[in-house]
Image 1 (cartoon, rainbow, N blue to C red):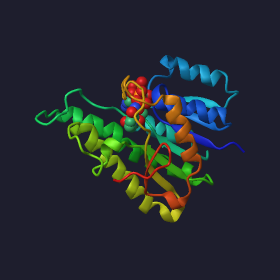
Image 2 (cartoon, rainbow, N blue to C red):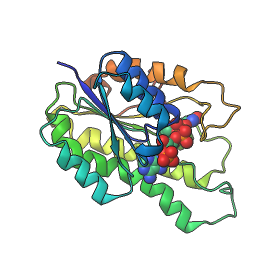
Image 3 (cartoon, rainbow, N blue to C red):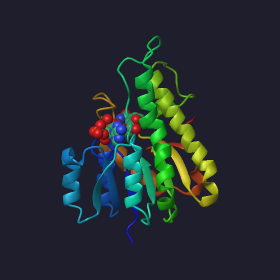
Image 4 (spheres, helix red, strand yellow):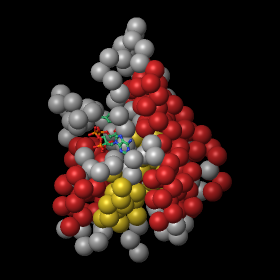
Length: 232
Ligand SMILES: NC(=O)c1ccc[n+]([C@@H]2O[C@H](COP(=O)([O-])OP(=O)(O)OC[C@H]3O[C@@H](n4cnc5c(N)ncnc54)[C@H](OP(=O)(O)O)[C@@H]3O)[C@@H](O)[C@H]2O)c1
């Protein structure tokens, strides 16, 4: 039987390409996005997928929408829960700037939402054989790799998202769940900007290989799109 991946923020960037790759490889894809009506590229993939990809509305900061999604998916196995949705936050986040409300918004999307999704959909993940929960963190959230400072908001939200995944790897290990944080590389998306060396297609191809090769031995790691382990 087809395995299923659920992807948040699947209407553009890395999430869109990942949805495309998984459908092409014969997976079932639950592609979530905030505004399905405006997600033209995702709709085109769905139309050519023979039912393989379904689009679901989800703003990851909305408890109502998370709960209604979980309710509608009750009893359906999800082999990979992939928390992709993320935001960079305000342009100015260097030393000296303090944008507290925007900081909290970035935390809601990048950090708290992945935890809420894991809570809401754990039963679905447990129905699968693979049992993977993965969240796109970032090398920018690695304390060890931080040599240039700045980006206070994005860095702290991603570092905390990494900790969520580490915690899940410990708390859910006895239930056979593999929980990892991932870095997609520096990718040419709206978030990554035009100078980034990697295309979304290259990143998604790598993420596909790593995600589908995960086993419980890798739980609790921060892995990049090539499967390399990064320092926290
Ligand atoms: N690009 C890079 O170089 C890079 C590097 C490291 C990590 N990452 C991470 O990779 C992930 C994907 O980023 P990307 O580069 O593909 O960026 P992107 O093109 O800007 O896409 C971000 C996606 O997140 C969605 N999103 C934002 N807020 C949301 C919310 N409240 N609810 C649901 N969806 C929401 C966006 O949907 P809307 O269209 O509705 O806004 C969009 O689909 C992010 O977590 C990012 O931090 C990216």
